[in-house]
Length: 464
Image (cartoon, rainbow, N blue to C red; front, side):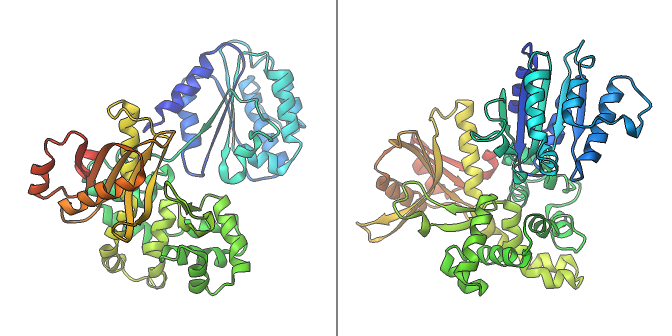
């Protein structure tokens, strides 16, 4: 199984501890919650129940069938189903003896949405039926369905979890394990268009080229990832066209509300609540640089999900051709020249993950508290000043800074000197400069910085 070592160790630690343990696992859809739990439970005695978007009676019948099966009752009759969760958990006594069992309720929000009494029943089961037993209870669900809110500070199960695990998509290195034979540039592109979401990565066939994959997945009507953005919107919103239009405008470069108004044709009273909804679901985020001194209202909106960002940047404009059944090869040819500029936006994210990995491994002894870009103004030169990557310590007194260039030519000395000059505006101690260039550096740059202790010249190949 790719990745998840930290999460596995956390679950194993709770399992190894004598007595009752409650592990809560949440994350976006497709991030691999069920897969990870299944792998963890592979060698353990387990009651594994996956709830459905259905009436509670149907879910209760299925959960009852699993319990009866574990109890050795092979002939399950419909009338044998427990009437409610309280009765079900009360009957678990014989099952909880012997080898420590794991009880899994996956997609918990489907149960709670269908029947509000589920949460009180679950609370009672934890307090009166399970708390004194040697058992691990794993509850899992999607962030989009409100899973985290159930265990938040004011949630109905607040403070009851031994551990709350927020499962994240894979980083760029873990993503690369899905396509091990690809070049570093192609591996980066796979991360760029999927964001490391396992459900999307499983769609890629490592036996064909990255562009054949992108063509078949994104640029055909039956492509698994071509339909994914609108499927996500239909699940969350009734007025799909409004949200689709907003995302298309932002993908086309409209970052601020007045720009979105201009490109969409919708007025601000219509757009504002829709944008807030997209923010609350994590589909959009505010692009707020480090040391930002302006109002949050002035910050630009960006699409936070890589697949949606790629779709609205490169795919949505080809929808007419895709729907008409034009060959995907010709559609991809038209898009390929723009992908480098798309990856310019993804590359700092990859570089930031590299920096965090270095920190975690101890090869870069710098405690990162916040990481982002810097955008300010240089009064001496009377021009805008930008730094692609700034990692700050907790007190914001020290920083590691870097320039990230995803282009066909090498990085020149002028770009590095600009990073030095802009870093002086941060008014904090610069511990190290990390330069990231997809295609290396000019020979004069290599000679100049070869012996410079606090400057590292890194290429895409070295990131992998």
